[in-house]
Figure (cartoon, rainbow, N blue to C red):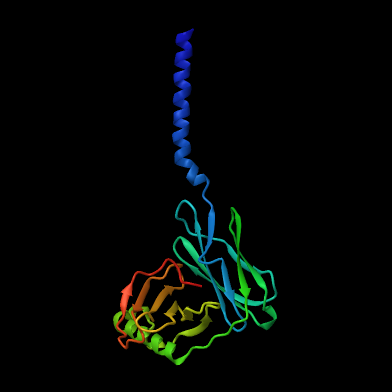
Length: 243
């Protein structure tokens, strides 16, 4: 009798081991789900600026094309539009909102949703509209030309030469020590950041992001603008463009 129980126990343990292996192999495939990640899910904006949200949509566990419907809605009445960039196994969504004076003090919730044949997912981001304004001062235009001229000469494939195709999208509000200027072209986002202080600490940095991606692919720095030495040094890009 004891011998039979021992044999039965061995068989049960073997079956449990096999089941565990099979679950370990197949469970990730069964639990695959869509993910929406914003580069920043809380940003500030101001009347007259174009607020700019960027989100990445992908599968959690394996690479597969994303076929579905993408929609955007807002908690407040506000003009907006969005653009979807399709990659092999992901989609990048850019959402543009246009606050005006009536939105001052509002915290606007933006809902991005994806509907496929198998599931529905939604994620929110917020935009707080504050009292702010911005202009491009001549010095910033000169800084921008330094970087775009360098790109034209050394990275012509980026097609950002001569500054002609860049549209000013505004400045990140409520930051005084380091200013961040956002620009957009047909295919690129360009951010110019400058440390507002005296030489030799008045550095200038620039980040370049392809609009079908989340992470910038190129960055450069001028160590001190006020020194008169405007030599560019290419640096490691950050994980995301500051917003």
